[in-house]
Image (cartoon, rainbow, N blue to C red; front, top):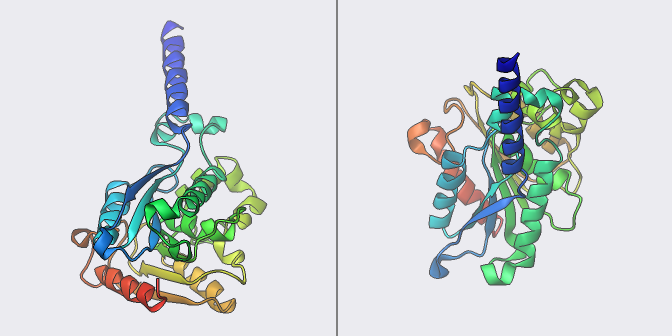
Amino acid sequence: MRRFLSRTYIVVLLLLLSSFCFAKKQRLLPFLADSANNTKTAIIVCPGGSYSWLDMKTEGIGVARWLQEKGINAFVLKYRVVGVPAYIFWYRVLGVGHKYPDMLEDVEEALESLYLNADSLRIDTTKIGVMGFSAGGHLAMSSFIYNRTNYKPKFLCPVYPVVTMSEKATHRRSRRAALGVYGQYNKQMRDSLSLEKHIPADCPPVFLMNCKDDPVVKYQNSELLDSALTEKHIQHKYIQYLTGGHGFGADSVKTTEEAIRWKNEFLQWISSLNL
């Protein structure tokens, strides 16, 4: 009995500590371009991690430094997620932990911050976009589709994104983390966060990329998004590479020579938009 109570206290303590750590609002890590090279374009970078953790190194800071070198102001968004402890100790079954719309609120606040501080940050409010990877790609698209504020991105870049929450191709871990242990079984909730079902007519330009051999997020996710964008006549560029895998961000060491070409393709695309 004592052992059981001891373990219970430990779990409760970890629960409280985790809640405290993740209760903090979003944080933006700035990577500002040099004055001489500054295009005044700003991109909020949303790392992936299945809405359960954040790959800050590869899909966050690594991407931001690359953009910074190219004269683009980058801001890595440390948005709220369920957190690894919730999976290790299973207290997520209690309904505790961050899920939608927490992440959406974080990206909305990040956009508002850039808009309101544009002058001091030396950025142009007509050149603010959101880039995301994997689950972060879902959040990047959400930053416009579900945005409830007047501060919206002017372009979007989902990279090997999670897209659907209702079709066979869904990434179940991301869906479970986004909707909650019980919410994942709610058809209305699944449909409500399936991006391909909610593309608005005024969606800004989109750069979409994925790899056919992605072992984590099924390639059909990007095909669903591409079809939805095409159906709504949204300006977009879609590239699907045969090889490249998943989770490489802007790191050429973690992918193929074929897939890492997405970086140059993106820079050419954003230049064609005068961004």
